[in-house]
Amino acid sequence: MSTGRIIKVAGPLVIAEGMRDANMFDVVRVSDKRLIGEIIEMHGDRASIQVYEETAGLGTGEKVESTGMPLSVELGPGLIKGIYDGIQRPLEKIRSLAGNNLTRGIEVPSLDRDLKWHFTPELHAGDEVQQGDILGYVQETEVVRHAIMVPVGVSGTLTALDEGDYTVVDKIGEVKTAKGESLPLTLMQKWPVRRGRPIRRKLSPDMPLVTGQRVVDALFPIAKGGVAAIPGPFGSGKTVTQHQLAKWAEADIVVYIGCGERGNEMTDVLNEFPELIDPHTGRSLMERTVLIANTSDMPVAAREASIYTGITIAEYFRDMGYSVALMADSTSRWAEALREMSGRLEEMPGEEGYPAYLGSRLAQFYERAGRVETLGTTPREASLSVIGAVSPPGGDISEPVSQATLRIVKVFWGLDSALAYKRHFPAINWLTSYSLYTDSLGPWFNEHVAPDWMEKRGRMMALLGEEANLEEIVKLVGMDALSPEDRLKMETARSIREDFLHQLAFHEVDTYTSLDKQYLMMKLVLLYYDRCLDALKMGADIEALASLPSREAVGRFKYVAEADAQAEYRRVAAVLGAEIDAAARKEEDF
Image (tube, rainbow, N blue to C red):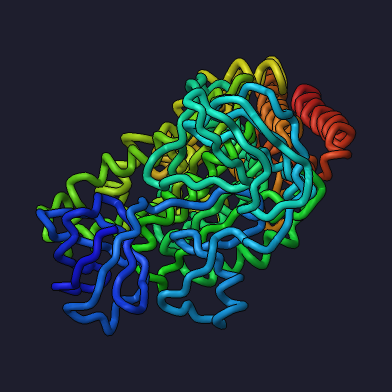
């Protein structure tokens, strides 16, 4: 164990000498207050340490002690429903011990050492095991069956494995390796956060992560195991959009990282999630959620570690065979923490002061996502999808963090302040956003939802694009200069925007829309367009077609409960068709 002395303190950066025996990324304890830190740079016997707690009051000459271990997280039963800070300290436990403010140097284990869990083994003494094999299960919550796995790097023969009630540090069994060593097995394992957990192989992203958000699922879908970015200016709805994705995405486990955002936003999550009923399980959403809270008033260095802590926990649940969704809000605040530490280390700055390695660090984070085959004798198919919010200053996505992110991710949901000011939410701009997964996901949608899903999606996107072009003409010469067919395109595009893309996050029905109902909504809007096009050929008046009474029913279809959607679709389609036919006949008679 290496021990040194402080020679310099610069905010969260502490430089200590006499640390020749320490290694990069070792966790250290700083001063008698035992503040936790991590070595991020070595020069001879001098170590640069980023301290994850407030450094006020530290002085030169104080002791620095290396633990000899990298920054790691504890993985085991008790993670679900937990709320941790950026270095996996349990905030609720700390509050019960020390009050509402974080006490410097407080040491609390991440997983409760006193709580007992009932372990049910799946294997028996004498069985051959390898890394990643499932030894048995703990029922962590009503909806999460926590798999206890053979740690990475361990293989051999089980010499003991017993059912019973255990704490996370109790011995549940033993494995004898090929070298003759006997290794104890517990419910808990540790993993260094900066190293991705190994997998057998990555699979192609050809299944969608269904979110219940129409603009996402229908126009810009994300695959299971995919990566997406939500850049947008202040007030455009990044956080609410991420909350919606965390609430309703078709994932078994959700890991939500509040990285440098406002404390009241994390408070909203804490207040809302326990009360929300998950439509997939009928239970509270918190029963499948892990929260990492490193808000803007918490130490900046811990913000840098928080996304690694979150994605390591997400990988652990992925290795059990679960579909995991990780929300990072926001990577801009994480990048700002990188910039601050880089400046204090006196590194050569890159664009706008960000370190030159910003792009590679972002890539290392996002590349840990994927749809995979896990380790183990019997591989399990699982996925880890990552959705990162980006908060560019002034909404300018030409800034370095946004550009570095866009080079990596395959889905871009561009939030538009102009749409937000018009109260169009989600304020995802359909003209600038894109999904590179659309082609690979098309066969799945056509097979599992409707054979013409992709055809209808393509027609809607084409109408929205034509509306943008026609709006330029309208600005120059007015609406009256358009042909009846072009007027119809404008009316249909308005219906797509207002009746389909606009979605109320706080409406009990509209907050989530199944794929089947989304398909009915697309059919209804395109039915209006197709029937009106036929009516125009028969000489119908575009003004009459634009003001049909049943168009209000089309607009209100999104508020119809899922169970009634089919019957209501047939009713509205029949009324709409009858009114269009009547308008066409009236013109013929005339």
